Each structure stands twice: as structure tokens, then as C-alpha cells.
Length: 365
Image 1: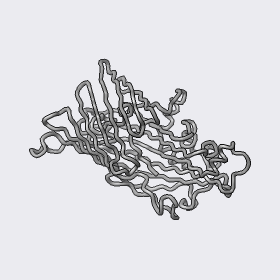
Image 2 (image 1 turned 60 degrees about the vertical axis):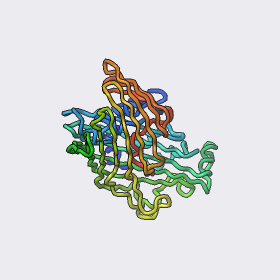
Image 3 (image 1 turned 135 degrees about the vertical axis):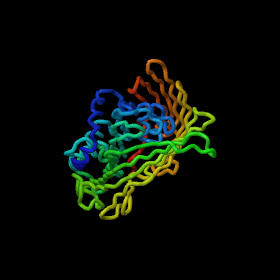
Image 4 (image 1 turned 90 degrees about the horizontal axis):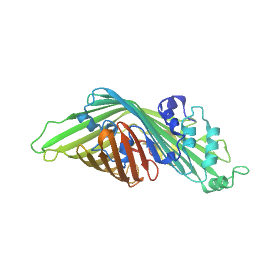
């Protein structure tokens, strides 16, 4: 179902397997981005080198000369799936429509959606190189298919039953982020940082249909007989970070993700859901503010103000830094609920009351 080249473009998924032994993994995030997750996802104006993946303007104030940005992996599941199900679909280069049917039969009692994103990179002077990949998948059964699954998949698939499996993904291999300060102006006293992230982008899309005519699954009409569609282009993010001269503890940020959008996926035939093309990575506008000193950070973000990826999100977060590199964190997110976490040096662990916080929904349907 998914090409080997696409699966190879997700180099960090295997790192997540080491966490499968932990219970209740559905609400735990590990890795370098656990700081922002524990703070409710807030951090457009208060992040560090890791946060620069979302606002490249933060790179202007980076003191890092050269270093490795530790791998970050975030997953989210809504519906009946668990992490083994998600990884069984996403992480197997040899999966085909028949194998995916086993998953659809197991999870087809209702809509199921899951996301996974991963990144790793190199920190450079006021810049970085980041390899990243994201994927979103949905299983959508109709009432007859859901009833059949709830019955224990007894007998043949009913004539009116149907389930659709959509999957979309993107890779940036790698993206180049850089930030710099603008000359100071009397009309705007303070410092203004600007950042850009140039992303060579590949976007992927698949849609399989399972019904009585093809119980083992077939590519939907818009696929033109292909297992997946691919589009290659370049996209660009743009961010701003302003610190007023009168109060250097205050920061204000603006972020335009996909300021230059990647090319949309065009279909061989009209899609009943999307028409003749679909932008899987749309432009989003977000703003944030933060108060920061040596010991405390408090941040507020409003994410996706135009609703390109769903309802706008309010994200609140705070961090208390203690001696010996210990940090206590907490936050709230209107989509994911309360969050909390702890950090020791560059290593963090985060918990969210609902599904784990996806810092940015890179792929949307």
C-alpha cells in the first residue's frame, strides 16, 4: 500500500518502538520536544533550538555553534486503534491492501484516525538542518460496515457495507532554517528577529476502498490505479519574534507555516471528498506571546487562526527551572486538555490528559 521509498523517508519511526513496553503510551511523549508538549504546545515566542522547528525566528538568538538536535517523535490516536495498530500500518514497507483489511476489520466499528511525526537535525550558527516526516491516516466505515465489525465480522461483507482508508504524508529531506535580526528602528524600539525555513517537500496520498465487490480492497477511483500519489515541490515557513526594549522579558511571535505552500496532490479523477486536488499541507497563521526570565517561562499561543486545519487552538504553558537542570512544566490546550511534564537537561517526559499534543498538524484531510 505504501511504497518502500516512502517508508524509508520515515527514518525515526523505529526509535518509537523502544517505548512500546511502557503502559498507557497513548498519553506520554518522549524526546527533545517534550518541553513544548508539557507546556500545552505553547512556545512560538519562548522555544529553544527545538522550538525553531515551528518558529525559525528563534534561531536568530541561538547560541548553539554546532550540535545535534535530538530525535523527536510524537504520535496521536483517536478512536479504536492503539500504537501497535498504527505502527503495523505505517511502519511495514510490505503492507498491502489485504493486510490493511485486517486492520480495517479490527477498527471498523467507528472512525479511527492517527498521526505520527518525527524529526532529527543538526544545529548550526543561527541555523539548522532538520529531517522530518509526518503522516495522517483515517479509517472511515459506513453504518453497515461498522455493524458488521461489531458483530464479530461473521460471514461475508454485507452488500451495502463500505470502509475507506485514507493516508497522507509529507517529508522534508532536509529543511534549512535560519534566523537573523532586523536593524533597530525608532518607530519600533526593541529587537525584531525574522526566520525562514526552506523545505524540499514530498507529499504522498493513498485512498483504499473495502466493500462487497472488493473485500480485499482496491485503490479508489481518483488514484488512477496507483497505490499512492506523490508530489514534489518546495515550501517555505516564515516567522517573526519581537522583544520590546522597555521590557526584555516579554516576547511576541507571529508564525506563518507554509507561507509558500507545497504543490497540492492532483487526482486522475474527481475525488468525492476533495474534488480534483487536495492541499495536504495548507498555510496556517499563528501568534504567540511569552514572559521569560532565568527561572520562569509563561507562554500563550493562538494556533491556526484561519482554521485551515480545523478549529483554532488556545495553548497555555509554564515552566519553572530549578537547580541541577531540573524543570517542572504544565499547560493547557483546548484540543488536548491539561498537560504536565518534567525535564532534566535536554531530556524530557510529557503527559497530556487526552491524546498527546501534536505540535503542528502537518498533514490534514
